[in-house]
Length: 327
Ligand code: AQP
Image (cartoon, rainbow, N blue to C red; front, side, top):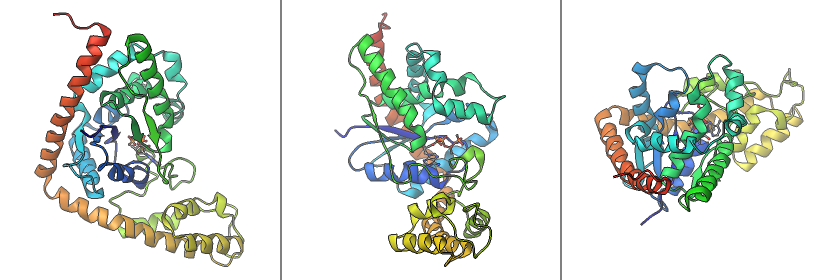
């Protein structure tokens, strides 16, 4: 029997290259070795303001993105979080083992408060506990995530340790698995690429969208004219080159920038070609899949049922450990 692990993405907007490089690309590499559970984590997506009438379409869209990128429903369990109520049930039990002080110190929470000072609900505060429940429910030993999620994994290990110490050995302490695109910066060059900040190259962007976005994206702010030399180390476009370009192109762009041998326009052109090459097949496959929404729905419902079988076993063990076994 292959081991399981859980990872997921919120249906809080269109998938972007940060989601792809930070998470999905690694998921595909791991689906032969494990039987992973990939969630569309809709309970997480309702922790920020959203439009209820759009949620089902967003879930379908996320699933089409997963499948287009290469997730295989015969190898991986692709599921919807809210269809497996054990996620929130375990979150409640873990809540009872969590201090408010610890949650308030998690950097992602502090960042969300900074971005939306008027919108701090309990759901947002409690987000890491639900995420810990998602992971521990499937007894994950590893979790492939982007760098932004590392503090949540640290918290998950702590809560697993605390539960094990208090009630007996139940959960493994999961380790994060980071990829080369572990932190993709947004087009603004200031924040990580994020659906809610709309600073993204999306996986369904057209070639034209990509060209337009990169043409207006910030570079080294000190390089004002073509003849100025620049510093690739502080250029956001160069940070994308590091992910997408060949070593020769990297050298060419870095050297050309420092010596003013090439301008930002040429440097961006090389990047655009790579982005188009990466995104076009994903976009086309996604559109094909979305033309048959019933087939996607079937995969999601079957995946949710498979996930629930595993989740129920864990919950039976958890309830027995904590003494909720009356009758
Ligand atoms: N910019 C990024 N670079 C690398 N990895 C990233 N991930 C997200 N942004 C980047 C990884 O994608 C997975 C799913 O993330 P999520 O959608 O559940 O939540 P998020 O990290 O909060 O993503 P967004 O786009 O920033 O969503 P919003 O704006 O709704 O909060 C995770 O593994 C994450 O590391």
